[in-house]
Length: 273
Image 1 (cartoon, rainbow, N blue to C red):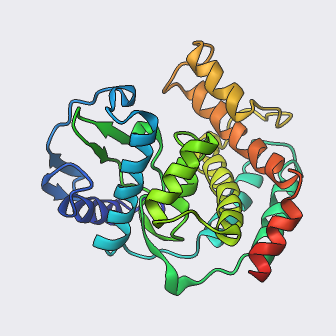
Image 2 (image 1 turned 90 degrees about the vertical axis):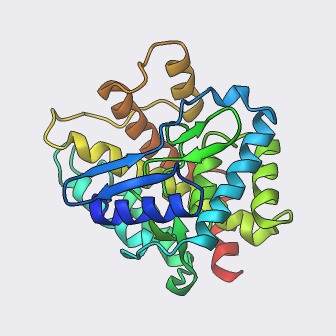
Image 3 (image 1 turned 30 degrees about the vertical axis):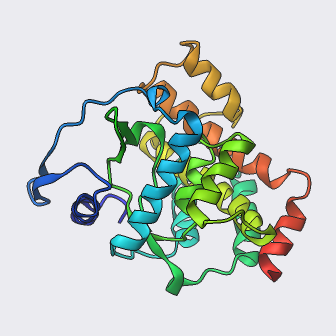
């Protein structure tokens, strides 16, 4: 379902009509052909509002997607992640049992997280920097292959793993999206959603390496170490090696988040409100 081209084209067309994606002139899911305006991307660092301006504008795009489109529903996010994790566990990429801590952690989260299917909203589900274009005037979201209805915090959680990781940028993002500073419950739920996002990315990326040579362990970069390796040229952006390193980093970050001080209290707050 994550690779359903018809769904992706439908979401892309709705996003373009809402002014979030570049204008779309033709789209045929059957042939896989889409024609849209070309956006000559410029570095996000050139945004006149600086990093705070970038995250505030992105918050506005997330809200536009949520309020002006009606994406399809393909299932509950935690269940989808569980299925992907089970598939990755059986792929032979890692030793038997290597992903058991991830499965146990996901079960803990699912036991605490109240998932309300009626509250789901249209979500891009992958607003990473490679899917954000700045044309010198405004931002656009592109690449809608993973779009579907999801929890309202998922896109915001993804943004806080990279572009708005710093506390001041996270605060600016959340206040712009929510209209006010979030309370303790929303902050706790965002922290949990961020871990689900990490696990989801790890599974999505690494499923493409199923059938590869057995990897004996899950040693990986930290998120900061991964970004530094890309910036220093140790990992080449867009290469299979970088994708693999990102996938393992995402799996490791999920387990590290489970072990973070105070996470039990976060789960309790999410469970009991």
